[in-house]
Length: 47
Image (cartoon, rainbow, N blue to C red; front, side):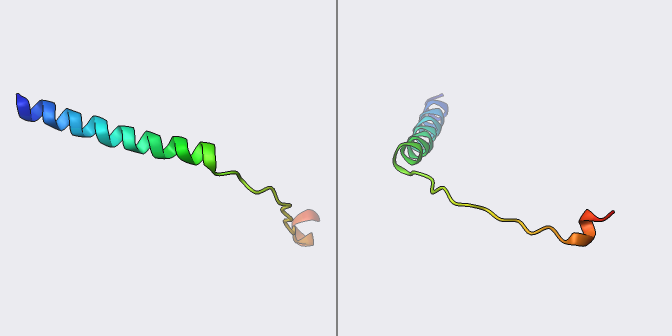
């Protein structure tokens, strides 16, 4: 039984690290806005 608790504890720690990293990315990384231009070929428009 102690090995099960150890396994669950390690899984909980790893999950906490992953969620902490995701939270840090959300807080500290700002996306850059930029214009996007997509060229559509004229043969696709004339159907």
